[in-house]
Amino acid sequence: MNKILLIISREYLSRVKKKSFWILTIVVPLFLAALYAVPVYLAMRPQEKSTVLVVDDTGLFDGAFKSSKEITYRTAGSVEYAQRRMDEEDSVSAVVYIPARETTIPSDAFLYYKGTVPSANVQSDVSEQLQSHIRTIILQDVYGISQEEFDRVNATKIKLHTKDLETGKDGFLEIKMAIGLLLGIVIFFVVMNFGGQVMTGVSEEKTSRIVEVIMSSVKPFQLMMGKVVGIGLVGLTQFALWILLSLVGLVGIQAANPELFEAAKSRQSMTELATKGTDAVEQMQALDDAPAVTELLQGLTAIDFGLIISMFLLFFVLGYLFYATLFAGIGALVDSDTNSQQFSLPVTIPLLLVIIMMPAIINEPSGSLATWLSIIPFTSPVAMMIRIPFGVKTWQAILSVGLLLISVPLNTWVAGRVYRRGILLYGKKITWRDIFSWLKKEKSITNKKTLQ
Image (tube, rainbow, N blue to C red; front, side, top):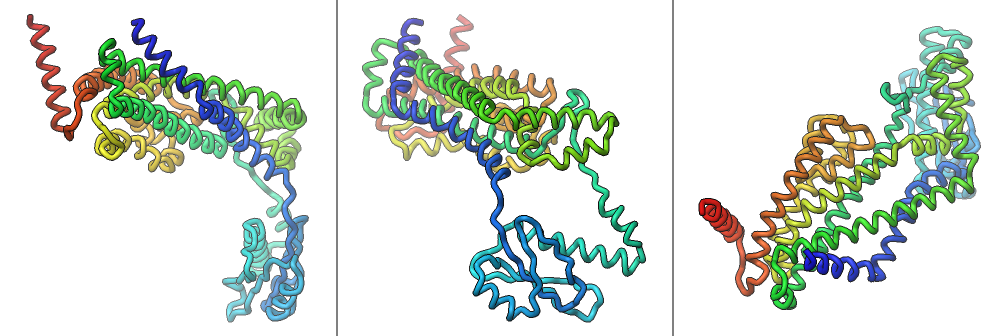
């Protein structure tokens, strides 16, 4: 046991003392903070003003386009005149041309620009105003709806709020999708990164023949487990520092902008009251008038980050041990990076498969595909973390963790047998057949000892 502790200490301290460890530890929280700060900044930042010229050959859209703070609409007599205005005025970003057709209602329109593509906001606003005015013409002129009836129908809006009956909290599906994607990608890279460090460390020691000196005083299994646990503790240390720095940053942001967080809390309370029918119309109007950044912060504060962090650490530890032991065995088989591909690729394919299927998991987090991927040990560390923000049934989480707990000792047994055979084997190209024969021999030896 003392020898394993020495190896763990050596692997841990040799990596924690590196500058790259501390640089990564500081950069990642800043990156995560930017992921939260950038949407907030973009939501608060005023958009650039644009001018759009309207050329209407039908005569149906005279005065129909309504200007806003960001977009100004002006009428132009012809496309040629609009083009000249676009050349002379930098503020003119596009020209809307509505050609006359044989039919009464126009079926198409064109948005012209020169060089610079109009922003998505401009394109969507033009499209919405075209569709809205066409509907107005059809309802009023074709079906004879009065202006009063039309205004009443047009002013009626309904906003869908997704709420959990068990917790009473809003769903905030878009925010959960973003967090699920982030968690899945992060746990994929950290498992691959620290697992790859185990494989690289074992391979380097074998190539440099240092392992021959180490093996004179420790058993192969002790050396392998010392490396796996030591590098795993480096990962846990890094996570602990990330969480600490993130909490410090969050407290700082909340102290600097307390009004935003208070607005998010009041918005949540208004949503809960409105669903109970107390002055529902006025409250829902207040919700609609609230800025987008308030809704974003409300969604972030409603997320149970304590549960997410706990599950992340649990699945990182189990996922890392599951794959790190396999990577340790692979590192003992190879002498160069080229040889490692034939053994490491089959091990990493399941995780890559989850990344490829990530859109399908996000689209239906409670579906059969997502459920099975979050239960199978080879894919569960990544798939389960994608599903966690959406809510996972207790029995599925228990089954997923239980299968990983069973699989980790099995992987350790397999990797230990391969490690012991391959770590001192030089100059021979090892195949999968060799690996299976080693496992069969170890099994037969174990059976003989049991019989004796």
